[in-house]
Length: 361
Image 1: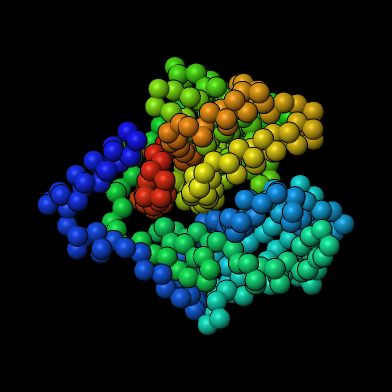
Image 2: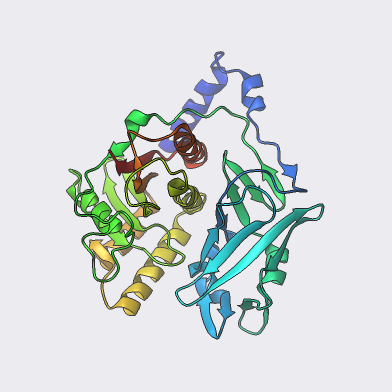
């Protein structure tokens, strides 16, 4: 009852606040537009429909070249090089990569394989070509400038985003880390970017209850950290990306994919956390079976179950960290900062999550 009264008090205060302009609020509504052609711009991320994460993860599988994987545990990799023409993307597993494209037109987005060989969608008692499945279910596309394409509709924000201040970039000393080596792997490679990110988490004054290496196809994030504190449950997603050059610089390509991955993380906070915990626990179990090494850097599966059970009654908040040593804080360009600003605004608007960027000096 107290939570209800507090909510009413908060809403009542806003309704009576004469400084809030109703016209301005209405002016910031997003009005979807029917998509009939490819919007000019960079494709940052591609997502499966959210429904596949709310069902049993193994209810839909993808089969190609004789090897089958659960759809939810595959990667969708966007082609960030083109700004026009069809949306091109790859479906990636540990064993194969298949290329597809989506062509916007008057009837919406039409999907097709880029080669004669199709990935097959396998169910318990049936199978069908992936292109047919995509033309029924669709995908979610995230573009630059916070634009989203879903259900053949284009959603464009109308608000003005705050700039991403150069001074907020967190410059780290990457001595001993290979800037082009992203994953630590089961060997726990100390010179990898992911290993360094985990070390930074462990050094923080407030201890984490769980730090989990989730790196792999279909990952939630490269690293997932959680702790229960006096404010409730804090979940932090850490997204790492290797540098496209040998030294830090001003390459916007270093940010395209990792910004897209960060924006995709919003899906895990759109609803209750049950799909998140179910997926994370399942991925942790399968990763340990596959690699023979525990994915837990801090805590264990028992602790993760404990947090899951408590989370139902706790206020929840989320934080995002982008780790890109290829980005130089001193050399960051307007284009790079604008891309980070779009990601920051998207996170703030959708799930009220702050964005932190770890980079090079």
